[in-house]
Image (tube, rainbow, N blue to C red; front, side, top):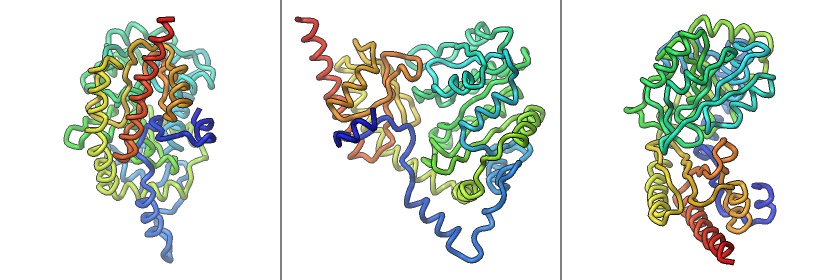
Length: 371
């Protein structure tokens, strides 16, 4: 859909994106500082087996855990694939949140593991630990959820995660908590990482969503010692894809946390009043229902009277030049995911086009029904 619209030069603004834009100028400065001198930065070193030691050092400080409990990976996707294979056997099943990021179940299915789902409900997409417990089957070996939640951006309270961890621990299984959006929560309100709440919980994250640095493919896994030994043992046999160069740059980025934090905060501080204004209008006009998340860069409104959001998204791209992610991608038809981490002018332009599209689509549907 994006390719088609771009080829016709109709694309105004993509609201499909789910991270801050790549901090190109900051990245350029960091690379110049690290690699234009002689000798080049000491951060350029082997990442084989244990990962870049400077990345691990920064993560150990961040999680307040020993380096032995941290493993660098090729992005969060690589982290998920590695954990699945390390902790599951043929015939095992994974329990996945719904709505949820499609790669959670697609990676499992690609490796031949069965997939079951539990529902996140209500306008805040809350998790009921009792419902999770009821959905665990005899072959369940892993549960996976996200916090902040993708696609809604909603947060899950630490006590809920701790309860799910206790349920998993009692049944001898593990829970992956994808925390790639966690840094969007204001620093003073940011909860402890899931790995600190229960030995059954595994934290997975990366620099992609919070830093806009998908180009570095720097992800990581944080787990309790026995679990990490199993994961690391498999990684040493099969995972040789971590880039020395990319993770050297990642180390330099992680050593400047305030720089990226300021970059991200500035974007979101300017974007949030704009999305709040449009979302309020949509609700007042009964175009959508649902709440905005308190933090993050994505929202997942339910469209009033529109159940086929793939068809709507294609119509929107074709007629209005705006791309959103239809809810079917996440297991929730009738919703769309809107990414709003954009420069104010671009965001206002895109949201106005989306608003026009919602109004026109409603008028079109009403006219069709009248006929």
